[in-house]
Length: 289
Image (tube, rainbow, N blue to C red; front, side, top):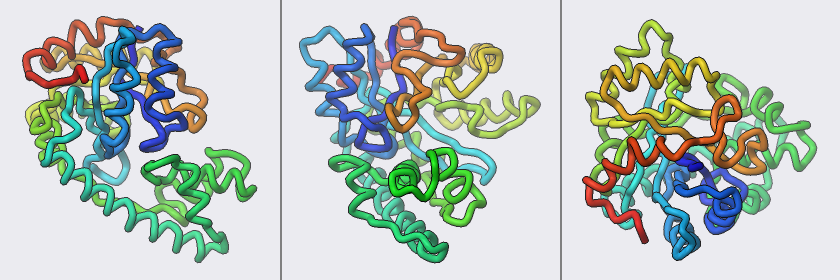
């Protein structure tokens, strides 16, 4: 069993990178990837926690890509070097964009009669954590403004709600270049989040492939098993390899379990060893810290 899509307190998860490594070991995973949003700050801690344990660690990142308003495009990068200058500069720009976005979110909450204690929100994000909408949502729950995370989004933070602020993400070309210059392999995360109809899915995925994306995360807990099977078949037709992940966030998303994907299925080793590992080996990426 493996997991190729997880988040720590460095982005919007509830466990530190080293705590996640321990959880992966306790679950009996053979391969584990840390893929925090727009940050590589947890990679060295995670790698050190895995060193000498037998758990194979793959350093990763999840980049937000500019896409149409009705959907989301996230690009996973596997086998990256966290010290690559170009990747670090791209991530620094994304961090500054996020800070500006958060300031606007706070202002909108103020306009709606809700005062945000940013120190408390920072505490929820953990040490050196990236602050995003999930942290504002957790703050609203803890201060009694809403009953749960879902309500925080449906009332305030989702698209077209009063405190939603969009952000300028990377172009697909920028994101693919950042991953490849860092020695990594680019993979499209949870394709159904693109909000593309099945009638246009093959054409859309072909264009994404032609932009340099090599793999497809066909298996994701947010999708039905039948849709995952359909995506896996499309990937084969397009010459893209298939990955699977849990998109684990811990307490922030208690419905998602480490090592488990769509339909409650365990993530099989083959999703790494038959698709991703050969590409990583050939790329020369140093992913064994």
